[in-house]
Image 1 (cartoon, rainbow, N blue to C red):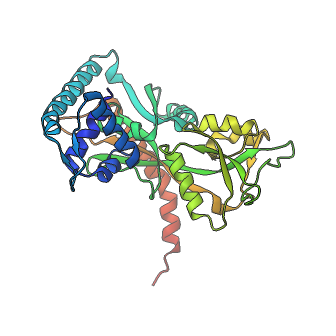
Image 2: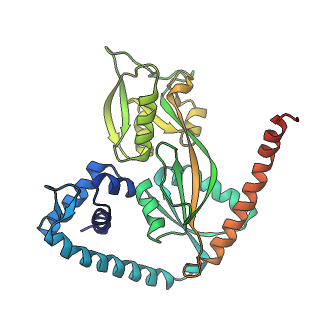
Image 3: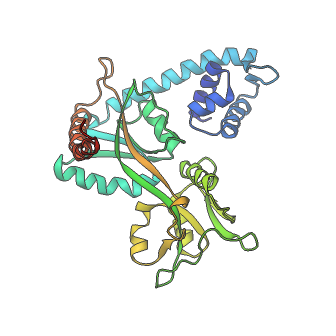
Length: 324
């Protein structure tokens, strides 16, 4: 039994809506429904009355609700106790980071950070975007680094969580190329000869971003899915083998493009790409949960650095305002 199933069930018991709970839990509704069904199968009884609207709990579900609340509370208390007693816990910054950013953005950022701020002991949890967000919400990390787009937002309450924009990332199509840099495949393809498509799984954040690109494309794209995984690095390796066209973050293919192993497969058309923000989140310190002093100092440093970075932008905006 996965503890996420308990959290899903508690959310559904509170919202009485599969779609709303799926949104709050950062998963698709079909995936959320499957997790509720998995919990019911594990328990051997129905928890949700699916014959009524709005959704309500069965008598067994009402009984299990209190038990689930108690179990989650005990698990969280035990985790907090053990993490607090972990050697060097107060001098280590725990990051939750999606897999792609853990391989592309995080190593370079840490090197730049330590060159100015100083050496930091870090603990990195490489997860999918949903699990990374939930790790922060559940108190399992100090900082969350993740992608964000207005049409696929990370829904964290700004009254509870602080946020900094660390940079941007462009997602666009790539394919294997020859020594002259000419790609094997170029969008848009044709109906008679669709391009082999290396796809993310439906629950992957980058997969949802690709869906936005395809939905917004002015010209019809002719793609035939031939491979699917939730790992960008796995898709990149398949593209390097010449197996198809793939949408990848620009930072993940810098070396391959420079060495003429991969090339843009969009004909340099800006319509077939999307720009995402790279955001850093933390839970706001409170009297009850003050957080680690090291994390507080690091956040203050990042705030000051962000303010300095914003100054030239503000001056440019001010220069554009006509004097009356």
